[in-house]
Image (cartoon, rainbow, N blue to C red):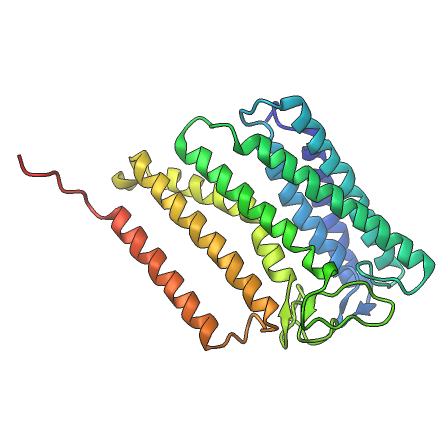
Length: 302
């Protein structure tokens, strides 16, 4: 870890510490906003940035040519993330919305500042991702795990822009410049902790799922390597590569399915027949592809 990006490691440790602070505040401060404890939102962002920055600290230690430029992109991620969490925390302490809020001149200025930090995060993420993607890593499994994770994660980050550009079915309240939900007003019934709408679509779901491909796909590759000690079939690099490609393709399809579901104003927990059919086809395809990949290979007869 001595070669990892140190500012990003520091950010990850700081966000982990803040997560504990916010968790305590959830229990000692009984104020709520939109039906959730006011410190839930800062805590969610702290957890997300802890994972996100730790993964990027590792990614920027991988082999790639533009080391100096990518180091600065990582540092830009640190500055933007700290600024965003600080602004979210400031608004939470006052019991006010942080995102989309233009109710007062101060609220509007904070939202503009957050828009700048979000823009910096997206741009730095994109540039750093390109630098890492174009180079090959130590083996093909690592190379494609990183590439797929970065591509899907970048799409997930970019999908957050739909919350402020506006999509059909969104309802923007007065003095608000954006919305999470589609087909329902923000602040309605939601899932515990995360607050995702249970009566309409919610763009936070594909945003969250897509962004964290950056952690889950590398973890899947590490799991395959660990299981190779027990299962001989996984000792074959070609088999592990195919499974990583299947997992990456499935994850990407799941992201687009969740985005499509949200844009149609459909709640995650109330999918219609079309959504369930597509999900079933995706699951059957993934299981079938994995079964073929793991099936014993017969040597051709002499």
